[in-house]
Length: 325
Image 1: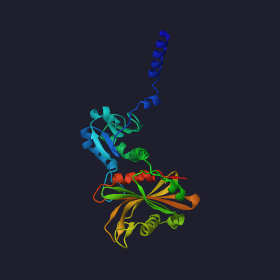
Image 2: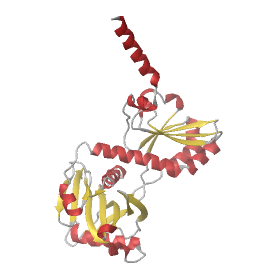
Image 3: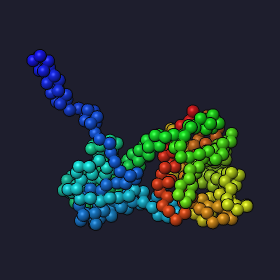
Image 4: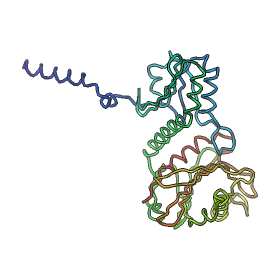
């Protein structure tokens, strides 16, 4: 009996002494926080000064393509002494430490899981501001990727059947059961979700490669493609009205990737010809060279007089889940 007690005590002692990073992760509690909310750990004086200004200019810059200015992230400032206990479980945080060598470091799951933390240091405010500005692209990318993954994780809890989309278009896409199929044709899918005072919409279709690549005016070709699809498939509230790309402002165009394939990413504002309706859109034209086509994945929202950042972020997370069969 004494031997059994001794062995049990030795086993517990061995476990407590291992202390590997992997085992530490196993005991991490779940992180918390709303999507696209960042805790900024910095003293009040620096938050009101140049450091806070640099953080706001980068992390709270307006989202491209929205009709009204809305920030990339919502920032919640707190002094260092408040960053303890449950507060350290927030999924995203930036911590500023003055009086140390200049540095920028990204941490994965330091206090909770999933979690992304960034530590920015410098001997003075000027060095810290330089670190923020020099690493802003990496900073934003780290936080955005974390939030896309978190949103996709939440979406996977209740998925709509996408078997018809796989059969007809050769792609799978994860979207919630709150969405419904409005149109299911051989070459065009229109998927919709009701929201208070509006709608969230997804379109999936394909076009020959030369529709987009017939000349070097890629953005012009994408606009013409969108407008022709809008006229054919997305009618407005009155006869003769249909969705078009807003004519007053050219959309933003970026190079991107979906499921390892090159894609043109277009963000801008749509409107309805001959009617007073408008809203933001996000369009991915994914090059599928094997099948000599572009697969078009687009999300757009209609929600007048309300914020639309989170609506469009959900649509982006859905579109980015696309996989080619």
